[in-house]
Length: 196
Image (cartoon, rainbow, N blue to C red; front, side):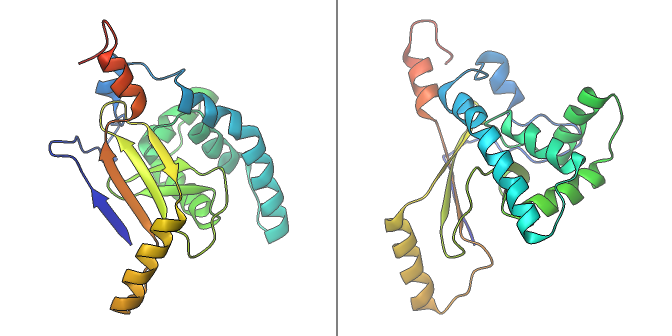
């Protein structure tokens, strides 16, 4: 289940060719060192170690390529598509990796709960914690910088659970994607010399 709540005129980014999601926004407003990007990088070592542990526990392998894709997703707070990741990996290793291979890796990482797919962007973002099967995951997607914050709320879990029970509907997944403008962009736009 994906519920999309979009602002009027919000930009849409799919994984089309070698598109860099949100690149136009980053050209005028750099978030490489903003608070939620730094927080994601700080989470990375712990999350990678936990992914290693869970893979051993589940009897599956976190191969070098799978590890590289997951690490690349932790380097940014923006969702990335398979073509984006293929370019990043090629830059790191000097070897071209076919997007279809990256898609297979993403399928594995998503299946293990290490990565989420954002349906409205056809792109992926690393998840630093495991979710209970019944939890609703809320993604706040900034239309200016392309950044994504992941939230959970017991109140939303309860409300959507009630709606599903009333309608006798069984969801494949419980994901809410909300487009808008993040606090960092609001603050930058209002600061002297900030981006419009």
